[in-house]
Image (cartoon, rainbow, N blue to C red; front, side):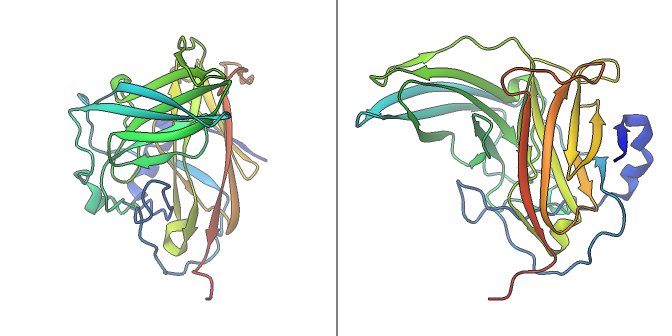
Length: 280
């Protein structure tokens, strides 16, 4: 197993070769979020690599906030939560400017919000509201951030919001203090990839209460046992991933490479890759 350090200098030449990040996932919020590609592809011939993705349009003024949160007791054991978001300087449902030329998987429904409850797989929201159910007497972390139409997060401080809350046995919601410790929230890869979509898997995550730097905290990424140290917060392509299950784990580590312990410091997710659509 080789450990590879991903830095801006080391990979800048490789950026010229990037042309695609096709991904075939089914978002919970919209069954028509993606279009499947039935092109076949051969199995990868080299080792798994990751390469930075750059050049996406920036949205420096985009803001995401929470306008209202409502809780309703459902029976005796669950609570229905409704979140209403406040989106400023960003157009949900619009196609991101370079979507047609990015050669990435792109939602036909446009730009959206990534809704991540307790670091579970995100739900894509094309409207600024979401209702969901949680058990009574429970505590939760809800990370939400704005996403380009091809699912790449906007990584500016005002484009994401963390909401920490609890509900008691009577369904009363209490907004809790935000943590001061480093956290990481997983976004992609997610779901199923078929044919040409398997060539470039978008690796994207959202860090909170920390930056990444060569002499500071980093993200250790494990892709099917191949490890990478990431010291810059930006999206990446996973390339040469094998067909079948691809398990991606992201772990916050300190400047000495030691795991940072705590809530939301490590996440693992498995995507499925197939060379072609299964026979029906």
